Length: 479
Image (cartoon, rainbow, N blue to C red):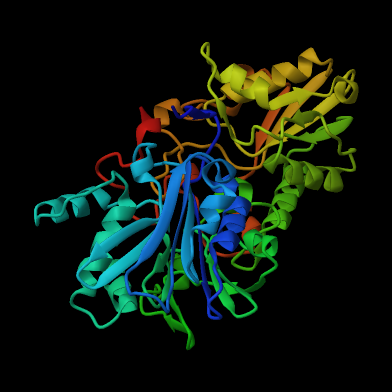
């Protein structure tokens, strides 16, 4: 029987990570994809999968394996050794729309009149329900509850009337709306596509005579591959033995309307990743510097809540001159998931993951940097843990503005009635979490984190780059 995994409901979670590889020399790619997915594990821990094919073998023969759990739980050496093929796609998943079941694990493999497609998707479509209904009324039978299957169906349907898979992808992109980075495997091609707004990251890498498409550049370093470039928002790249072909017909005419998810810089991406030319680590350092400039406070120690708060805390320390230290010991074997105890609570989730170093904080005025406050439960507990360890004062700084609105593009920010900042002043939030002071990153600073690149700020401002859906598409966590 599978163990039920629980993600801390007071943390934010991203939907997925994708990884594709095509080795022109004919070498098996499954093990490289596995290690690439390992590097993307922070993007999703519910399920994972790999699908591979041999470009010199029978057309349409795909060997796939997927399951619930972490990469090292799902894949064994024997399973990886059985996945033969020189082209493949992999996926790690956290469900923001569609339930957490094996059927919803990716990659999706479709057999249709033109052959096979294997697809891995990161993001959320805002028009998935109506597209699904439209397909169902024409006889489509769905095997999953995820919007990725809607994308796969549209690509397959378009492929019947087009001369190439990449053309079918372009036609499908005219219908689907929302956030998506896609890696698609056809019998002789690997295709990457990024939505015109560029919500989710996707980049190209190269290792010897193999090309890679991956969510984050950190995964390239893991397998000793070199970074080539980012896939541009709206771009479709097709990788064949003839090289890389680019189609930018779906790019927005005005690049200023692009809308990268700012939370890639603040929280989701690994600090050693570079997203559209901007170092995630430097973005977080800068956020901390901004907090020190805009909301200074006298204190003895600056600490970060691991992991994403650490770089921002270092930036605060560098700007303020207040020493940077370690106040929290994180259980490395928990990651962002753990098995739910019978007498469960959000309190136990935090205490299993974090302990406070009493020797570091006792008798000190502590500045605690975190990336966000969602419901406030976790922040309240961590402040209390610091006080119980002897901290004289606890000043909380958040390296993002207050969450006021839900996200429909792949981040599981809940409905407004569950957000602590909705309808409350900062002073009221400070009292709830029990801090001596509380301050957030200013809205006008967000653009600095992306080095001026256009970003989506809808969860803070309510200014959605696309009209939000009329029905809630975001999955079980909204209940």
